Image (cartoon, rainbow, N blue to C red; front, side, top):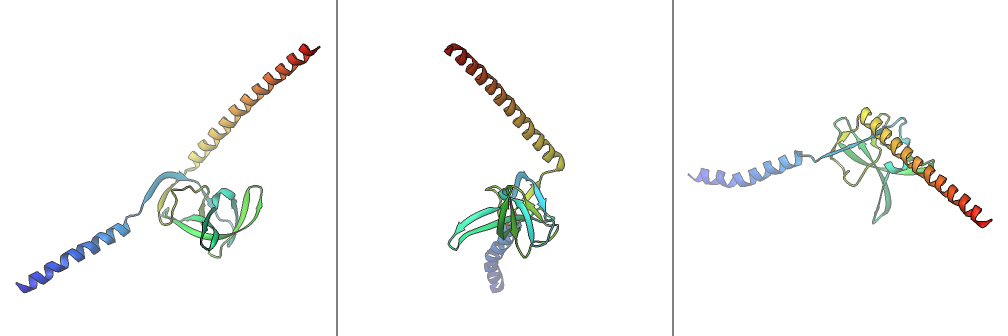
Length: 161
C-alpha cells in the first residue's frame, strides 16, 4: 500500500513533463506565403534592402535575415550589411552557404523557429502580373490628368489674349 502512495505522487510531475515536451514539439505555422531567394555565393550575397530586418537593442542596431530550411522552418541569422547599390545591399555572414534560401520580404509575423508556406512560381507570376496591371492603370490615370491639365492650360492662354 505504501508503494502505491509513492507512485501516485509521481504522476502529476510526470504528466507536467509530458505536457511541456508536447508543447515544445508544437511549432507555430504561418498561413501567409513568402518568396525566398537562393544564396549564390558563400559568405557574401546581395539581397534587396527589404530582406534585411534591423533591430535596435541595448548593444546598438543589429541586422538580421531569415533563412528557410528544407522543412520550411525559419532561422534568424545576424548579418553584417555592406554597401547599398540600386536598392540592394551586400550582406556578410560566416554561416551563409551556397544554396541557402532567404525570405525576400519578411514581415512582423516572422520569428525564429516557425514554419512558413512558400510561394509557388505560379503565385509569384500572378503577383507580378497584378502589380504590372496596377501600374499600367495608374499610368493611364496620370496620362489622362496630364491631358486635362494641358487642355486647361490652352484654355487659360486663349483667355488671356
